[in-house]
Amino acid sequence: MRKQKMDVRSIRLNIDTGSPVPLYYQLKEQIRSEILDSKIPPGTRLFSERDIMKEYNLSYPTVTRALRDLVHDGLLDRVRGKGTFVAERVDSRKIIGMVYSSDITNGHYLSKILETVTVYCSARGYELKVYNNICGDTAGILRDTAANHLVSGFLLASPFDPDFVSLLEGKVPFVWINNRMSERDENCVVCDTNAAIDKAVEYLADLGHRDIGVIAGPTYTWCSEEMIKRFRSNLKRRGLTWHSDWLSSGEWGEETGYSLMGRLLSLESKPTAVIVEEDRLAIGAIKALSEKGLSVPEDVSMIAIGHIVPVDLQPLPLTVVDMHLEEVGRRSIDMLDSIIRHSGKPQLVKVAPDIIAGATAGRRDVQYALSK
Image 1 (cartoon, rainbow, N blue to C red):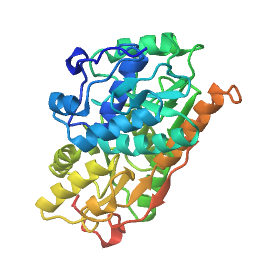
Image 2: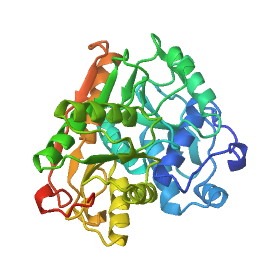
Image 3: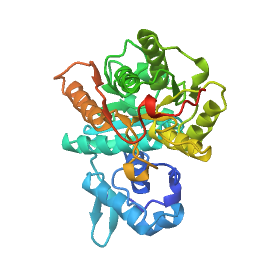
């Protein structure tokens, strides 16, 4: 039975124009959430494209793409001459929820993971529903979604409230994606951070560097904490000296990389090479060196960990440790799908990284000695 047309102002969508998540995707997923949470009942005639455009200041292509995808997903029905309606029966059993926190998740990283996960979800017959853990009452929505089994399973891409994780355990399948709450967690697919540090230190040491510093991301993230621990133990194993002053950490982004490299350059004793946890931090660090009249790798060698920023957006091709995020995304979906189908058990999967030689790491014997 068809119901009256819904007023666009009767629900509140949170469209974030500053988010790396495309606008059409935000609109689609938030309308999907309203439907699955029964805030828009089956049979309801949806507000028009023009209503949505006017209310949220969105373009026509953005709105039509979102609604077209929802029709394709079976959540909406279009009736010629009458309008767009919420489907009378919505099957939520083939939906995977991916949860992240935009305040601590790197934008380029998120985009790459999201693109990959979307592709592999589709290949496995799932639709992907994305939740930003800090928007509105997301925590309450997630608890309701989990308690009522409105999704097949969850991908957890950021640190979470232990109470929410406890709610999932034994009830709703979930996989940590490049993230974990403790060493006991087995249902994880992660980049092998230890191997990445090993490869970066080995690469620089083979080039003759003994004075190596680190520019890291926020230390409250699991990967940064692991990286710093491994770096210190790696230096000790190789007989290289740990300089606490040569460790700088901060938020993600070019501005932070610029600032942290400036701090390293202000020290009396300076590293000849720096391992940088993320591409954008490295790009900012290169800018700081350039403004001081210094060159990479002639004055300071640099290796970035990640390989997430396209080469055409880099000031010069970075030497990187490729963390293979596409493989992380693929194997996360494979694991979650096998748990959902009861054909596999949770396990810890570490995706091995590889060095990609660029133009930012050079031999120590052809560098100027900044520390002298």
